[in-house]
Image (cartoon, rainbow, N blue to C red):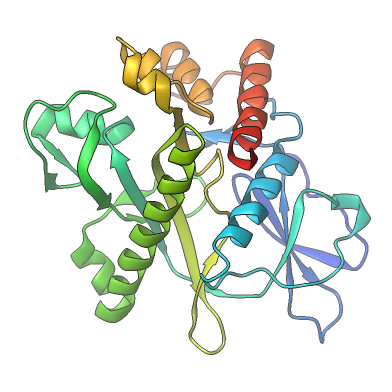
Length: 287
């Protein structure tokens, strides 16, 4: 991973797979600068090369969703973005982040499909027999994961484990808010000819204990979006799940890497296709 950017007036404090966090050098300013990079990750690895303008595209989409979901408390605060990261950064309040990835699945795919084939369940939740890869689930499922430290794999956990980690009241709130946001976003996406197959949210609490949506919202990195018409008419999983996200990267890696050692570099064509799909998604959603 490349060294974090030096931003006058801001001190680098953390780098995740995709985002870099900075704290103000002004002791009285408690805001956090969240900078989205062009890095792309898959299977818990940061890959190379990055996707051109990905940071701007993710930030644009997150901010658009934060506005559409304005009644859901989030981490965004007002202020000027440093020119060096204009277009790909957000100013956010400092939160106590919860150690849970709040995954909501509306369709059967990905690791959920793999588990279903083996056991007829998704994250331990029993499903009807006879479902196909890409089928809509009877109802959206809340399938949380424990957020692993950088370099380790996130772990799917039961709702009971979430209760152990954050308490019964907060666990129920995480589940209910996540499902509500998913249903609202999926309904809007459907109006634009898109299927929101699944997504994941991260939340934190502010100084007053208010739960706030943080990190990113319903982006191509945190969600699977499919073309609704292709899903209806496609005869193969690939045709049914024509994606507007980094599934192109996942599929290429799955076909060209055995998950041993470091992943290979992405070909130029895969990088270009991914960037194009990210842009197409924003165009479709915003009309």
